[in-house]
Image (tube, rainbow, N blue to C red; front, side, top):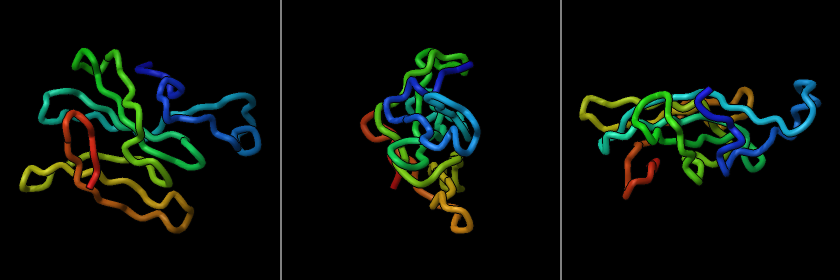
Amino acid sequence: MLFAAREAPWAKPVPFAEAEFGMKGDVYFSDGPCVFRMEDGRLYLTWSSWSRGSYAVGAAVSESGIIEGPWKQIEKPVWPENGGHGMVFQNLQNERYFVLHYPNDKTKERPCFKKLVLDKGELKLY
């Protein structure tokens, strides 16, 4: 295990876990991971989970620079609500993009493309 979802400050228990999945208690989940390096040479991992009332995407950075971690969770989600399962890719001009499904509403989900940049050590989407 790389980390537990409950380690991220932004991740919250799934409020419908018992009704939908038959699971009691505080149920957290991590879903849709994507691992990549940014120009600062650090290894990042984005992942989806339940947050304040909807699906969100957060990130962690490997303190060792390798997949085994340890992983430090970034305080705020990269995408705070109603989207998930992001992946990173570079276009032909070597610009990084983040694509995720948005909104997280059945029959309305569509790909959403955002430029991914490292701004003063923080991952940002534009």
